[in-house]
Image 1: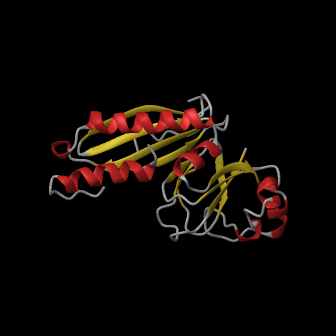
Image 2: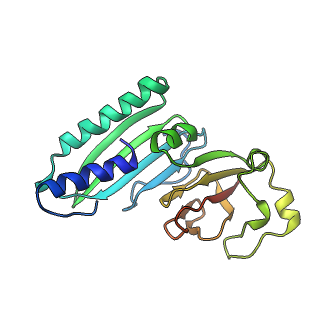
Length: 204
């Protein structure tokens, strides 16, 4: 079940009952304690999506929600190949529903959720027109200088339109405006402009 579908399922069920509720391997960061949705990129390129939404069990059956998620993930796997996605868990606790799905790579995550999400080298991103290295800033908000920008070709970058927390396997060294660092390997994108694309450049 995609991020948008999970939200829709929870909200729709609440409306139907006349109540309204808003609705791996080589890991370098720990998102398990976060209370907000996140995307974790592992060293091997696999991606773990964690979606957390408000939830009131009295208005919805969590088992039914899990069945819906399983059906959507299974349909995606049938269409895209074995191992492309796997529902790891869907559970409710303390008024929240938490769904975790593993993806084989960033392309599978992007396809499943119908959103921009890539993990590649900076040189690949430059060649495909997905990054302007001269627009990057460091963790203190200072613009990157031209020499350092030119030396980024072999580094990896996460490019995304998400507003979730993004966790990465290496230290974050540069980013685009609006990205807020939570720690050296985790960034909060909730403050980015709607419809914008964010870049997070790593330092291996």
